Amino acid sequence: MNQVRPRRSWVGGRALVTMLLVSSIAVLFDSATASEAGDHARLAMLDTQYQKAVKQNDAKTMSAILADDFVLVEGNGKRSKKADLLKSATDGRTHYAHQEDSERTIVVSGDTAVITAKLWAQGIEDGEKVDYTEWFSDVYVRTPRGWRYFFAQASLPLPSASKH
Image (cartoon, rainbow, N blue to C red; front, side, top):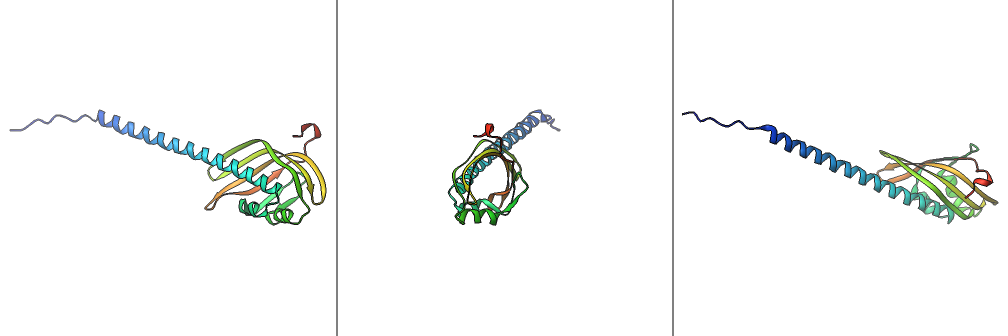
């Protein structure tokens, strides 16, 4: 005698597969969001550490954050490399009373991040008194050793009315 087997319904199975797929996507999205939030926090901390290191002429911290092939392009077109910035921190001709940024934004795209902010610098640069505010954009890249400060573009100093 042949037994009649009931047909299995895949409707329940499809629902389970759909639910698992949606859950997996939600976990991936949450992970990406958490990772992005972690990147933002880490980059904000690095930016703050770097500005503090510049203010304190802390070449060791600056060196740890700067990529070996770092380049700074100032508003007047002057270019400086990592070695130039480290020399400036150690040659005794540069001291800051203020080296602080504000209005900071951070954008992360994969292994690249851009920090844009308004910087107020006041003190002595290369033996001359300075007091200026400028906009800058810093490019960080993710490396096997963590985020490294790779490139910077600074504006010309802002008019006096735009300071601080």
